[in-house]
Length: 319
Image 1 (cartoon, rainbow, N blue to C red):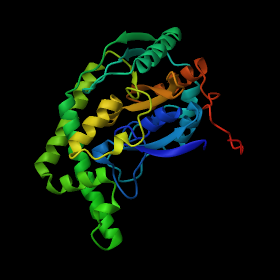
Image 2 (spheres, rainbow, N blue to C red; image 1 turned 30 degrees about the vertical axis):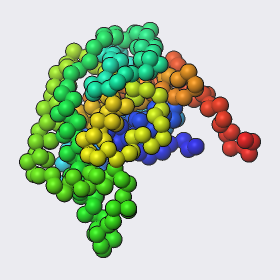
Image 3 (tube, rainbow, N blue to C red; image 1 turned 135 degrees about the vertical axis):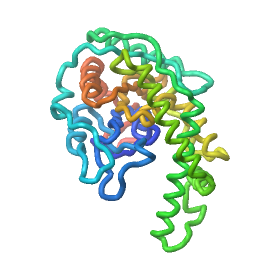
Image 4 (spheres, helix red, strand yellow; image 1 turned 90 degrees about the vertical axis):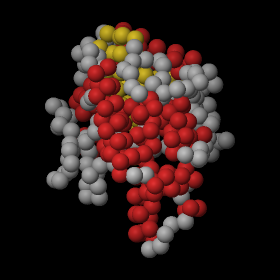
């Protein structure tokens, strides 16, 4: 509907809709852009802001616009050697790509069409001169899910406080989404020790993930473990925050690992289900430049911009 749309990504909220809508979605690396003047970071550094775009070059151009830190930021990413748009147009050197079609979190199954899309992308990368190795970095899925739940509880308790200051009264339950209200209520009883332990777990699992990627440059994985999920599936309250994320991660798989580690990650519309719905394939790396270069290579090898949904009317009045 538009050439680009802004987004924020704390466990995949740029890449998941990009996968469902057949567009490009980049979560930049931690510290790439500033949260000034209102905040230092979000969810202890797990949140990044950027955009969903139709093309890789648009994605890179917008990143050039927003990249940079502000005085007083708690941390920042090193400035790129060249503009990101220039990186997107460069042919990258051969990369060591680790390819995984499994999930790091417990799940019933991964759709064979998603597996096929990831494997086809791997073959494309091999044909472009990159080295593919099957495997996956290991993490403790229980520790990651529990830490993410705690951080969201605290963040949403803070959101409640912000809403109260804005309204001049205590906000009501019906003024929040039901799943948010569950997080708010749990946030009120989360202890400082819970919060400190969640941060420590995030850092420990980041080091574990990085060790598993030490001999590889890029990770190739699904964006979602199936095609676009049914409407409302991922935003239903589950009784507890942890149960909410267990359902989400059984559907999204790898997306949250980029947020936990601070790595850059990009979803590309490189596959389709048998009934014509988009399948996103995800690349992760410590920095955006190599992702944009690889993404542009893939976009040229398997173009997607001409792909139009069957009922798309392109601004006409025909139904």
